[in-house]
Amino acid sequence: MERRGLMVLAGALFFVLILGGMAMAKETAKIGVIVVDVQGDFTKFKNGSLAVEGTDEAYIKAVQENTKKLKGAGFPIYATQDWHPANHASFFTSHKEKKAFDLIKLHGRDQVLWPPHCVQKTPGADILIDKKLFKAVVKKGKDPQYDSYSGFQDDGGKKTEMDKILKKDKIKKLVIYGIATDYCVRATALDAVTAGYKVILIQNLCRGVAPDTSQKAIEEMKAKGIVVLETIDLEKIKGS
Ligand SMILES: [Zn+2]
Image 1: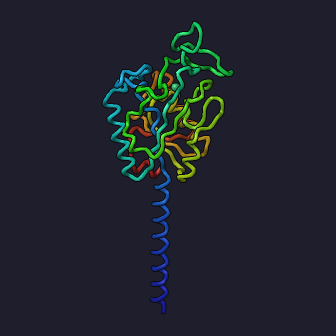
Image 2 (image 1 turned 90 degrees about the horizontal axis):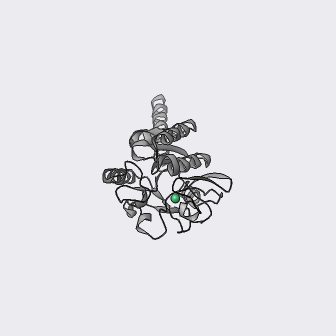
Image 3 (image 1 turned 180 degrees about the vertical axis):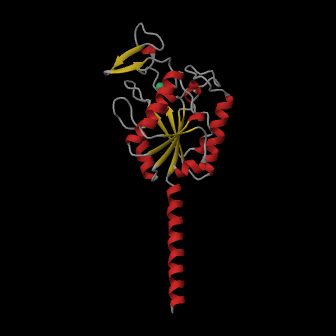
């Protein structure tokens, strides 16, 4: 009888381990990836109007290959796409006697005036990564009055469909990388934290407009609990 009792116990233990394993597998399925603004106008590769340092062909290839790898690991991939009307308020050309990179107040916020970029339906707005990799592409910056560095909401507080899509897909943790570290990557990652997601930033797949603001952005993200990994590491992504 005692032996039989032990066998029942062993059986129960086995069952618990199987259930635990299933729960862990389920946990893995809740990780999503956001590739931020890897678009022609932000890259040297395409001679973009707002080309960020270090965005050559090798960078695009690295983003492409690593995104493929993450999709292969079973993570749904999402993208953000800067998608401005030609008269967008963030363009210096929309303001009298202003030049590129001037700083103005717009709706009470500091606004950098950028060269026109990512104008809807122009080649500069194209995403340079294979679109077949993406489960969804979230467009941002469509309102001519407000900029939208974040993939979650614009500066007027209007939400994109990002959070809705991620919630529908039961995503709990996000791997984020892209362009630019100090603007759209930063804003998207910080808003993801505010929306309740765990966030992992992949530093070598990010490129920034300026080294000092990029470094500041990394520190700010770390302070908000974002895990910064140098490269894609599937074990660390699943474990952190
Ligand atoms: Zn923009």
